Amino acid sequence: MDESPNDHTQARDEMVAALTARRPLGDRVAAAMRAVPRHLFLPEIEPQAAYLDQPVVIKRDAGGRPISSSSQPAIMAVMLDQLDVRPGHRVLEIEAGTGYNAALLAHLAGPGGHVVTVDLDADLAERAGRRLAEAGHGDVEVVCADGVEGHAAGAPYDRIIVTAGAWDLAPAWAAQLGPGGRLVVPLDLRGVQASVALERADGRWVSTSVEPCGFMRMRGPSGGPEPTRVLRQEQELMLTLPEPREVGDALGALDGVASEADIGLAGPLSPALLGTDVTFWLALHEPRWCMLSGRERLARLVGHQGRSGYGGTVGVADAGAVAILALAPEPAAEASTGEGAAGEGSARKAEGASGTGAGGAPSGASAPGLVSSVARGFGPGGARLAADLAAHVRAWDAAGRPAASALRVEARPIGEGGDADPEGAPHGASGGAGRDGGWVVLEKRHTRLLLRFT
View 1: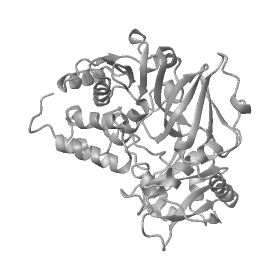
View 2 (view 1 turned 45 degrees about the vertical axis):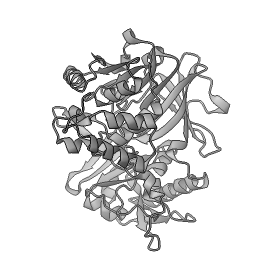
View 3 (view 1 turned 135 degrees about the vertical axis):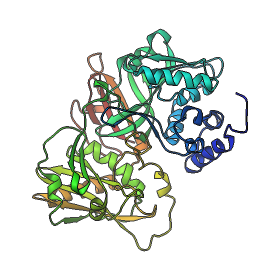
View 4 (view 1 turned 90 degrees about the vertical axis):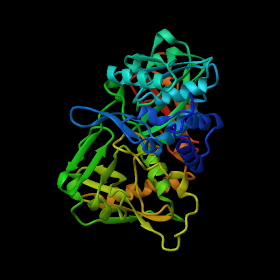
């Protein structure tokens, strides 16, 4: 593609420099992001704004809910590193969006490769095809179809990438991936999402890397059960349950007096660890876990407020009571230890569009330094829930504070010889916790997921 004074090369260079300052990128992925002009795929915003590390919503449903976006560049880069596209590869992308990610894939696959991108919506597929042609990537094949079915006509593929949140692994993806191929998918793990890179081994999927993320869910049954959201409009509070269940008036309990349970860790933590790693631990080990989000009212409850005035935390809700994780800054720990930098961008999501975080606990703390934490319980039984929540954080600490990226994921097809679980993993129920403990088992429609921290 010809260079011109308006191609915004400097803006692309600055975007990549900012991304690599927070997290190293592979050389080929960094080169692709420097080469492909994102602003050509986002004509609805100013060109300079296209190079900010933020998602951009491009389509909403009739109720105003976002249903498609250009993902945050940081998580796009992470997933491209996970995918490891080589020159000459055949690549299938599920969810075309703007077409920008397909252009990056085409750059990585080179002239000897081929990229197919699929989108459910005809208008988005048409838009992506038009923008790809204008950006010099008219060789990308754009197909309007349901991505759950893949695109058999172009199979087999060396790489498949899904850029919307999936609740399960579609059988078509396995069928259309060639020998030695790799699948990268934002996978729902009981209300948190992880971008999981998977390869086939002995009739099952085995993860090669796991990174926390947050994408809009796929539409239809492939998106999985709709999370339950309980609102208190007047206080701008929302309680989110990853699966439908009855919790009574848990939000109403927040009007009462709090019971506090000291978590009692040997040392303070960073908001990044609490906001991602503890959230993953809780999601996988506590069936009553929940997320609480809101504005000023929530800030008073958890001790911090997000940069935008909106924040969140995680907790446990049951039978009209709720316990939440709250933060308190350590006076002697003003300086950053570098630990907080790991979560920069991780606790940020825009309208559920994208991001690299779990969307969990206490997000948007005013500084990336160290904090102490406390579990606050409200309502009848709140003290017990607070004690349970504190015990989970202590268990995570005792296990060596495993990161979300330390998850190992195996996926076995249900009903196709995939019932044998590894190393004595429990069948059909949650297993033990910890770095050296058992597996956590999640039953999906097509696959049984087995997870443990390593």
